[in-house]
Image 1: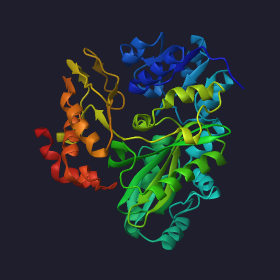
Image 2: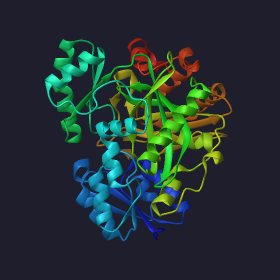
Image 3: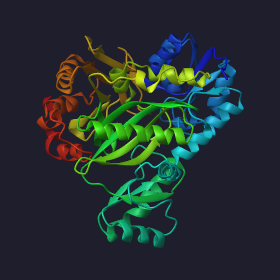
Image 4: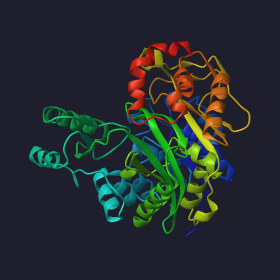
Length: 458
């Protein structure tokens, strides 16, 4: 059923808010930007048709305050709410509150968020859909005795993971029983603090694995995929450099991997944009389901660059009740795209946060270059939120050409007044192992141990 949407409320901040505003305006929608007191001068506020203050700088009192956000959306006269990523994007209670207020939630159903957002129930759904999963517990481990039985069955090393949430929080790797006994309570405490849920599960730790994820889009009836991305270059399980497609993936594996993602999304009648994440063992060519993110991803632009589809615009259309406008045969992969996350951090000093005034700004341009950002000259980056300043994305006909284009674009990018992670990306783009796609999820941590002190030379 098509729903009348004239005005979209953006319940987020930063570059993703800017991204959503632009997509909504291209659909002819009015835009209302939610903002905390700290974000009153943000680029999203300046670009939106209307802006609404939802609370103090602390996210817990503004962007994470369900009652305040929903009340502001209703008072603004908006018809729909887009949650972006992070904050309340994967909060089923928020989705329910939006719908209970008579507004359209741009995303999956609350039931889908609840099922796929909890890693244990998502794992059960993956198993039921025939998607390969990493050996481990079939659900939460409620007691130390249950945990010991799982470890005895699968052997060390193992990963202890939070059932709820994401972003690398509540995860520990144990190589022995002593480590396991010590790390279990730490992981539970971190998960409880971050997500309000200390539940844990255990899975086999796959050494030298690559992180590969498949972008899907569903309308509640049909599902299509937009191929895969590789996000193996991570620091503290936070993605740093992403690309599409995955350079090391054989075509037959790519076909099976993408189809498995479609099978899982279809099994839950998925609605909206979502990403299904896998571990890929390059030696055995096996892949294992990790989790599903029931939202738009930070790294979605690389997928847009290789397929030509605007994923944010499509998820808004689906929320309005429109069916999928493309078939799988319409989605063709072309060329190679890379994204570098530019953060307000000093990589030469342990990635210390570096908020502050943007004294000058030079944005790279030219063919195949895109910079999704929250920045403008004279803006003061607040210290209260994620350090992401923008995403530099490039496309070219081959991976080698895309890396060369990224080097050129990084050379043009100038953000005056504060330290950024640009030197890290310049160093990675010049590294022979990165250029040859010889890396896994452990690569960057080890690389930084030996090269972090050199980054101030880039």
